[in-house]
Image (cartoon, rainbow, N blue to C red; front, side, top):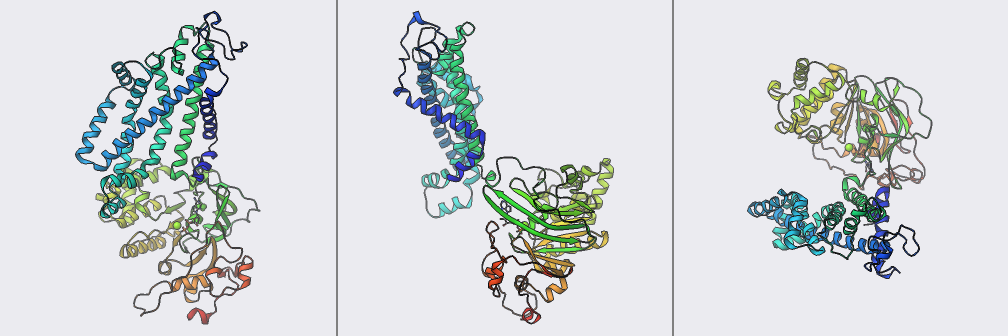
Length: 626
Ligand code: ADP
Ligand code: MG
């Protein structure tokens, strides 16, 4: 609740709407206590007094009644009717929607066809018909407005309920012996309440308008009783001669509806969990860059040279240091493994290279990324876009979520090429076929027109690799490309990537959490922990003699086939939270060799260019073998 309010307050417009609405509601509640004149007492000798007349702050209307007093009482009535109508529509509509969505089948059909019939009539016409049948009057107007809004709630809530009615937790409740009534109240309802609140907050304003509309036509509140709509209606004949009588209620309706809608939009945004981590704005096209320190010096060898990269997430007052002083280099044709437990900052490092970290909340706060002599941190969005997918390509973990479900894979591959190299259709098709062949998809002529769901997981990942290869990149960043696949397919994909690398001289940054995969694929490895590189070196050396205790324990976690029985050592404890990193070595709390010095101050990288380690007490050969 507190988090919700804080998020709401961050949205300036919603906050302004909330404050104005609160003021109007408080004034409306306090109206009987204020020293106002009687709203319905006429004094025709005193008609059409302009605003600021002594005794009549806002002037008087065509019967000489005090406009201020009528405005306050009218606002009170309009608000009450609007809120009441919204509540009634929400309760009845949601109940109908939940029942229809939960029971489904014939019940659903019957109820929803009834709702559809209501929806088939034009909105206002239906309300007019209901009032005409019931007779004019404020209560009947309320009933009419509530009735025409019921289908809106019923449809919305049914849609949400259908989505959760077959979830496992509902089945579990049923297995536990709960009846339908209790399941609806305790399992389904809490899950749809946010949607009901959102739908209500965005429709109350509309309902106040509709009620005012009916009153304006003389079908709502009856004279002499004032509500905002009837005040407007009565002032209509004097619109030109005495505009203040129309402007006063008109401005009030405007203020109320605007503030409710702004607040409603804010509520919707704040309740949407997807927006909770980020700010309420759309992410920028490239990661924000705020480099405070000096930019590290120019490019060395290599396709990619990451120097002292720092990427953080700024969420509210918290700072998550996901990547700290990461330096990596990849030469042409080289495969560098980046390994570490989940949450160690591998993906954020990879995404930072091309400015793909969502911002807000992501910010690159230091370092540089050199590609072919050019610093990509702070490069323009246009420049980054020209490189993305062309010179530097990505392969992601889950191919099903990266392929568009409704577009044929051949078309998606063609699009990846077309973005950078506009070619005629026939040439594109031939290139796509070549790509599919090069990633060894069987029967590429048949598969080119398949949809992603018609392919197996391994084939989809091959399409993902084909897409990365589409523009013959110099560097491929593969973020756990085989984690979602079974071991045989994993082996095929790995050997495919390895062959492609040798054939085409590709450089690969291969991200994984599996040392077995690293041993098979990579020339060099960098081990990441708590957002830092803790050890780096050639794969063979590192596997034979890990220097950092964390590396040793990671290697000890990998089971060996045919290696005889050996106790697998899990690493005790959990990786650190990156918003609260310890001052010293991040691994110290889990390390059996940690000393006071490890915890006191940051540990520097030591060693020569090829083999580096960030540890005060590195493993010696004897311990490594133990
Ligand atoms: P992995 O090594 O498993 O790929 P990531 O690079 O995805 O890990 O994440 C590194 C750290 O950054 C994690 O601790 C994660 O909690 C944090 N992080 C990632 N995205 C966000 C975000 N949007 N807001 C706050 N923290 C984030
Ligand atoms: Mg990851």
